[in-house]
Length: 461
Image (tube, rainbow, N blue to C red):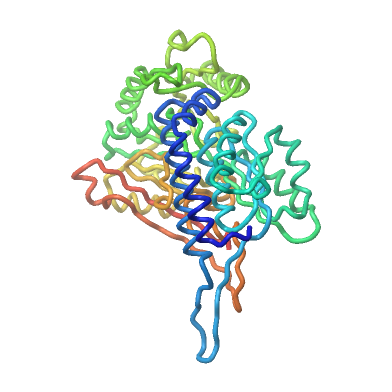
């Protein structure tokens, strides 16, 4: 895209952000009707989409505004120039049809690329509306093209084309591997793949954790958005000394959840995305019930008669390896553990191969530090819920079976979507550790959350 970086930022991305805000009510309505989002979830998603646009606009000015002077020997000039790579194929999921769709497209456009955007089949109308707002802001029709349709059909036409220099994908690991295989068989230049593929996300609560805080954060992390978040809590580890009390409190909170019409303000949990998802989740719950492992489930009679509603459930398992795959819905699995096994549990979780999000509830600082260092996860959340990463403050993305590294709201994402030219380059592995909000030491005095983020940028270089 030949438009200067400053103009891309101001006229295109920031104007698109303003248009999304102006059309907020329409987009919220679409998220409710097409994707089954509750009103608070839909509103938060619109805000995240706007954050992405403004964040990438600012980064476009910073990174692509002109040559960057680099240090070097006396008498030698070293400059770093960044530019777009070409055509990016952005494949977005149905669970964040505005935010992720917008974030992937905005990052590619801000770096000077053209984009083929493929919205999820279950959220096609939303993708088309958001694309229309990009066009209204001034993005030419031949710079951003929206192609709805069945994923395999569209991919079969787009991926073999060598003009496509990169793919940004959010979805299942199986599909990500198919995309990687298709790109690997092409002749010519090696294309970029930026992928985020979910995870078996766990939270560990020791005997020093505050039970009421654990319950609040567990219910939010496991059941908000009907459990249909990549970062959602799947497995809760409870130290045996507090397990009975905490499970009693979780059951009480679950019994109060309102499952129903996502457009109603009183609704806590809306439907899952489609009939197939509903059947798969209910099959998993039924299997656990027959095995005597169902700890609690919201009464079925409280569910609406029509729609893809699943009664939120809590299931006991012996170890995380008992789960053959991620159950993408409102299901929480619980494991009890002894204090002496705490660190070895990190090895069990790491052995699954997933490394997206992880939560810790504890008031012992050295224990928090030891677990944080041992666990393999893109984002480690301490004494708070483990969903809702903030653009620009809490970079999001995992490694291993969870994806190719950070993909959203982080400066290093640009390594995937923007090329650079310099007289010398290096490859490096950067592990970035940050703590946000108040320090862990202050948690004894208040309930403010701390996010401990570990981002591995090595495979993005």
